[in-house]
Amino acid sequence: MTDKQFGWGGIEQAKRAWDLIGDQFQKFFIAGQVEPTQGVTFRGWEMARRVLGKDLPCIRQETGDCVAMAATDLMNLTQLIEIAAGDSEVFKPTFSPYVYATGRVIIGKNRLKGGAGSIGSWQAYAIQKYGVVPVETPGLPAYSGGLADQWGDDKGGWRKFVDVGDDHCIKAVAEIKTWSQLVDAMANGYLCTIASDLGFEMQARSDGFHRRRGSWAHQMGIWGVSDDRSKPWVAIHNQWGDGHGTIKDFETGETWPSGMLRVRPDDIEPAFRGGEVMAYSSFDGFPDRSDKWVEWSLI
Image (cartoon, rainbow, N blue to C red; front, side):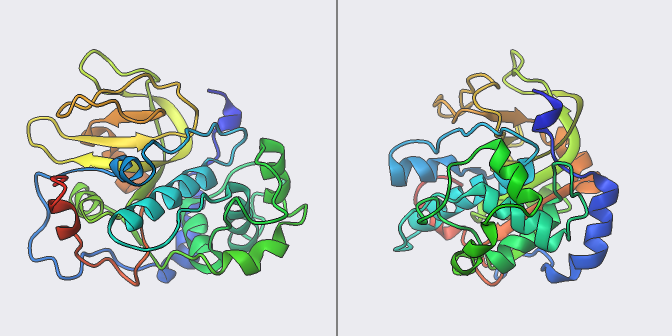
């Protein structure tokens, strides 16, 4: 990886952003849930395999737009989760430079102008207010790091797509502060982003886990979780291509999608205190949906 692939603005900037817009987000709880979720395993990528018959493409980030790339990947997989749960919508991949621009320029008010990067809360609020734009939208250019840099500095014609984006908004976002909350969110199909200074080894060790190493000012997506007491894990999807090796599922033996990190829960705990972990919902809140996954033996 290179410094150009990092792009989270850091904890101090994240704290300032939260002071300004934190009241726009909901307090996380699963509405209708009687007891906290325990012992579950949820693999969000299985929804893509059920709906598309394949994994989502592992797109390689070309500049410091990791906050937008992670949120875009999450929105794509969230669409597939909703379709798998019974929605009649058609899957439409989303265009990351648009969400990068709305987060940095409109919500972030150009505070990082002249350099790459963004903040998780800026991005989440931007997707609530200005939505996402499908890749198939007429007039969109192809993704490139140069285009993301241009749009992220409020150059180019990205603003003409706002009328398209506001038809495709996420409805609720909440901050996740504990492992228990993360398990609750994921078990009910609410994927999360994680932004922090935590770095990891590029390849898993012989035990199948990627361990903490170094510092990445970076945002990624959390696509799966297991609260199995004997061997719990967090599945983090990175947008650096297929550089993290082949991951085999402990239980099923199946290969995970490219670009995944399998991390122990203890190794992401610092992000709950010194980072941004946020859950996204396509509903007005976070209703209990655990029954959707029981029939597929996902939990």
